[in-house]
Amino acid sequence: MADQPNNAARWISSVVVLALLLVTGIASAIIWWTGDWEHHAWGLTLTLRILWGVWIVIALVTVLTRVTIFGWSFRRYFRWAGDKMPEWARFRPSKAPWSKSGKASFSFTVVNVALFGLCAVASAVMWILVDVTGEWVFWLVFKIIWASWWVLQITLVLVRVAVFGVQRQKELLEQNNAEPSLVGGERSESNP
Image 1 (cartoon, rainbow, N blue to C red):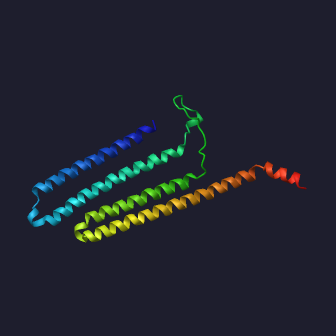
Image 2 (image 1 turned 90 degrees about the vertical axis):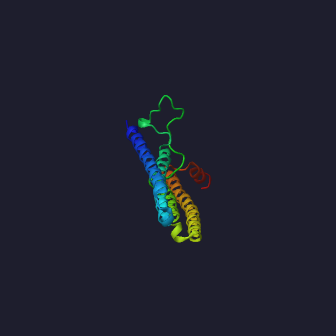
């Protein structure tokens, strides 16, 4: 029952994106056939770029939202309601072998997707304005945007590894403090 609204949301968002694709295609065809290209070519080209740029951004937002939801679904890691394994499943419910908090994991996922979306939207805007800014400026800004994205992705991954490492160390310290170590007890007995 809980899956039905999710499926309905997917279906509705797909219909909206496809309907916008259809409307954008029809509008583009009307502009191509009825536009006064001899006197207003620059404005008509800008209009077409705006139409298609907006559609690309909407499609990208839909895809990124679905990718985020899909990626976050792995957080469950073979757990079922009431810890009862369905008959069709081959895996036993278990705890994830890594130690990381849900909040940190979700935050990194959101930042990662938002960073990609921001660079994609900025690239779409620059593509729309290529006739205003010029080809050279467009390619310069485009390369700067994606080089910055690459550096920020590397930084984000390094920060993510560091944060999860700190969380793992904290969990190991808590486990060591909660259970007395047998090795420590043997050492104290052998060395008075």
